[in-house]
Image (cartoon, rainbow, N blue to C red; front, side, top):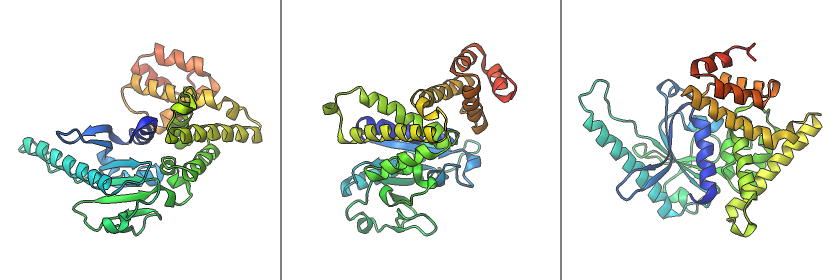
Length: 312
C-alpha cells in the first residue's frame, strides 16, 4: 500500500476497530522488515460474536491481518501476504514460548489473513484453491486449508448493502464512488458517518491543496469521491430543509477532532453512548463549549460531564 491511499485505508480500519480491540498498523514481522498493513486482536468478550460494524465486524470477530490492494495482487504479492501471516504466527509462538510457565500463558491463536482486493485478482481463485464461503456474502472466498486461514474479499463483488459499505469505500472506480454516495445518505449519528465521513472530508481537503499533476491516480479518485460525498450531503440537507450539508465540511471534521481529543483526555476509547453524547452536544452547545470542556476538565470530571444528560 502506497501514498495517501495507504494512510486513508489504515485510518479507516483503525477508526472502525480501535474501540473493539487492539489494532496496529505497519507491524514488522521479520528481520527483513516485512510490514502487515493492519493487525487486529478483538477484546476477549467480543470474540464470541461479530462486532457491530457490518461485514467488517464479522471479519474482525477473531484475530486477523488485513492486506489491502488497490490494484489486484499478483501471485507473488499474494504469496508475500501469506508469508507475513506465517512469519507473524512464528513470532508470536516464539514470544509465547518465552512466557511458558507463566500463569495463564497459552499458545496464541492463528490469525486469519484477509486479502482485500478492489477487483478479482487474475488466477487467484485457482492458484489458492479459493471458493465462495457458505453463509457469507458474495465476493468472499476462502482456502480449504484451515491451518493456514486465507480469505479473499473482492470489493467490487460485494452486495450493495450497508453491511458492506465500509469495505466498499476501500475499493476503486464505481465501487468506491457508489459507497461514498451511500455514506452521504446515512444518518449523521451512524457510526459510518461519525467515523468514516470525516476521514474522507479531511483527506479531500489535503488532496485539494496539491497540484493535480502531483496526485496519483488513486489520490485523484479519492479527491473526486470526497467531493461527491460533500455534495451529496449538501443535497440531502437541502432536501430536508436543514443546514447539515452546508456545514458538513466543517462540522464532520470538527466532530472527528473532538472525538479524538475526548478519548485522549479520558485515556480510553469512547463508548458508543459517549460518542453520541459528543455529537449531540456539538449540535446543542456548539464547538466552542466542547473545546472549553475538553481543555478545562480533568478525566474524571469529563467522564461525569458526558454521562450527565443535563450538563452544560
